[in-house]
Structures are given as structure tokens and as C-alpha cells.
Length: 442
Ligand code: HEM
View 1: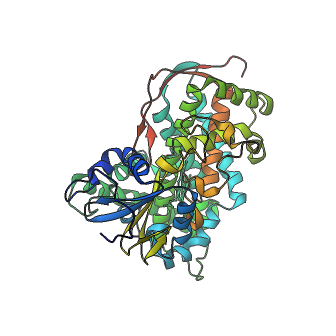
View 2: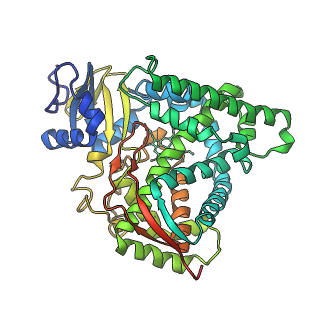
View 3: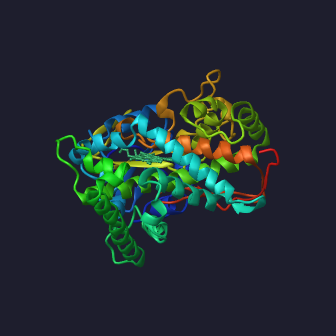
């Protein structure tokens, strides 16, 4: 190996290198690498070398070199097989051509409608819980984020329009994600993925056809996308719109579900934090009051709890790039063809950035403490040009869920231990069973 490349972490097997450990326990692998070599080291995934970096300085290089020396599309080939060639799974030129559409989806005025959709769906879910019962918060958050994504991105008639099978098909796609195996091998999971993709495309095509035939009946995102020009002035064809929607629902719902489930779980595991949340809600939110952006902005402590959850239990714990042009990282040189991996396992737990990093401590985000002020210290929503465009959507959704749930219900965590289930798309908590009681006064 070239002596100027980052040092290799211990424990690699002949031929496979660290591939098995990466699949089974990447967090342990990354933490060991950090203990051995610090903020930059390398691993070997079969024949592929990858530099694993952490800390604001290196993270910043990765995010600012993306689309320059670093390529996103190639590193996410496994995603392309699932959602199609769109946004960051497409080439740079296509991505920048599609960016105006992405900006349109997340325009500030649209957020008002999205937050209304969140209120409606969260309240509908709470109404369906009855007076008391038991639920698995992890499973419920997945359901709830699907309802929210449906209403916000498809429209009020989303249940009929998407059909009963839709989210099960999505499940087949997420279960097929695999960054190591070639995505076109004839494996059962890849066959299920391809069937699901075809069925989802059919559903979306139906939605597009309906809007093309009767544009006067619709005032929703799909109609807007049909009418929003790309940077080069042309309009997206149906197949690209389908891929954008598949990509948005994909990027948006499992990540948010995992993060929201951790937020509720961590609050229940930390009663002192929960009482602060409760005090904030009692002061800021009247019974039956819906949340708008202004109200959400007043829930400052909840926003810190959301940031702290993203730090300590990120649902997107790593991001990958491929080196397109040789790149200097500190005193090392990354050769063309290497991968680079930004990871939360190390970045989010650096003791010189975060005091007592293993502790769930929302107050670290307060202006007085101001930890993690450098935006590149935290990687849960990425960074740079490709930083998550749905971040405010996700944070608002988590705020609405937390506010309405804890305003209207008392919950007790029953699962004695809740651990991280690592996925190839998003991470989430293991089942988190709670008993709940509707509060009398609300
Ligand atoms: C807690 C929830 C979420 C998390 C943790 C999350 C995380 C991320 C991360 C880490 C990236 C950057 C990937 C990289 O640099 O390799 C990203 C990008 C993206 N996310 Fe999210 N996301 C969340 C919610 C959402 C939602 C709700 C939407 C849409 C409704 C969304 C849409 C996107 C899009 C479109 C991109 C690509 C941006 C670009 O390439 O310019 N995300 N997300």
C-alpha cells in the first residue's frame, strides 16, 4: 500500500479485509480504528480501500470536496438500483439540473402546508390510540411517518391514491439495500426489489396521469413538479418525476421514523429531560392548539432534544464518497478510486467537542453551552451542498410528534433495553414497548 495513505486498522481478514466486520458491527470497527489511529484511518472492504474520517476538519473537506474531487453517485450505486438515477444517485450534471426542483419541494411557503399535514396526521394517530394501551414506539413511528409523508407529499387523498400495498412495497426496497453485493445479482431480495420498484412506478404513473388529465382538480406537489422547469428550462419526464418521488419518500420516511422513535425513547429513559419538555409544553401550547412554524420555533428545549437525539442516535450514521481526483487529507493522500466514509460513531462522540459525550444532554445545544458550534462536527444530516434538504421537514415533524404526544398522553417505557438496529438505509431502535394513558385534562 502507498505509504502516504492513512494507516490500516487492525483485524482485517485475508481477501475480505474488514468487510464482514463492517456488515456486522461497523460502530465497533470505527471506534477501534479511532482508538488506534485517531481521526483518519483506512479499512479494506474486499478489494476496496476506504478512508474513514471524523472530526470537523476532515468532515468539512469531504463535504466541500463533494462534486469536485469526491463523487457521490458512484459510492451510492447500491441506492441507484433501488430508487433510480436521480438527485445524488445521478451524475453531477443531472443533479445540478434537477436542483431547482428540489428547492421548489422545500420552499419555505410549502413548509406551512407540510406542518399542517403533520398536525392532521399526528392528531389522527393520537385519536386512534384510545384511552390507554400498549404500543411499540418504533413500529408506530414508522407507520406515522408514512402517513405524514403521504399527506404532505401526495395530498389529502393519499391513502386511496397510494393503495394498501404501497408501504409494504417500499419495505421490500429498503430490505434489499446492500452496499457490498453487486445490485444486479439474481438474489431473491433483489428480485423482490425489482418487482416492488415496478409496482411503485405503476402507482406513481397513475397519480401523474390523473393530474395531467385533470390539472384543475389538483393543487399538490406532483402538479407543481409537472410544471417546474429544470435548470436548463426543460421539464422532467414522467419517469424522472417518479424517481424523484421514490427518492423523496425513501430519503424521508425511514430516517425520520428511526429518529423520532429514538427521541420518544430517550425522553422516556431520561425523566428529568422529559419534565423540562413537559414544562415547555405546558407553558407554550394550549389544549387543542395546532402547531405552526412560529409555535414550533418557541419549543426551544424540544429542538435541543431533537439535536441531541441526532447526535447520540443518528439514523443516518455514515455517508460515503468515491475519490475521483487524488485528494490530500492532512498529511495523507487518498488515491483515485478509494472510498471516503464520514461517520457519526466517532465524530459525534469526540470528548474535546462534546462534554461527557455518552450522556444524553439536550442542554449542550443551548447558546450558553454552545457545544458542536462548528456545523461540521455533526454529520447526522450530512453537510455542504448535499446536506439534507428535508432536515427542517424532519425536525418539524419530530417537534409536532413530541409536542402532541406528550401533551395528550402519559407514557411509561416497558422495554428494559432498547438498542440500535443498524440498517443499510437508516438505523432505528429495537422494539420500544410503552404503556400509555390519555391525560384527563386534555
Ligand atoms: C431524521 C430524518 C433524516 C435524516 C437523518 C436524513 C439524513 C440525510 C443525510 C445524512 C443526507 C446526506 C447524504 C450524504 O451526504 O451522503 C440527506 C440528504 C437528503 N435528504 Fe435527508 N434525512 C432525513 C429526512 C429527510 C426528509 C424528511 C426528506 C424529504 C422529505 C429528506 C430528503 C433528502 C434529500 C432530497 C437529500 C439529498 C440532498 C442533496 O443531494 O442535495 N431527508 N439526508
